[in-house]
Length: 102
Image (cartoon, rainbow, N blue to C red; front, side, top):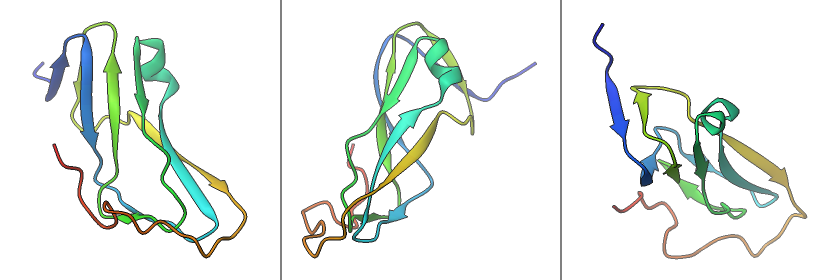
């Protein structure tokens, strides 16, 4: 059987997701790996997405400790959102509405 995907050796890899976000002024978010991937020796992690951040495609880093085959369209991560105190000081930095630059 032919499987579409990527065979990854040990290392760090940049991920770009099809999903974006448009966070209101009271929500912060981060991307974490799924437990099934963690049990296979990999982890996914992003920085914190600040309240007010907006992008068409979110990104994270995949850290591989043991060589692995990642199938095309595999669910490797999930987004975690946390409610914050509403702020008028929302994100307005250089990466607002930008795509992940490789």
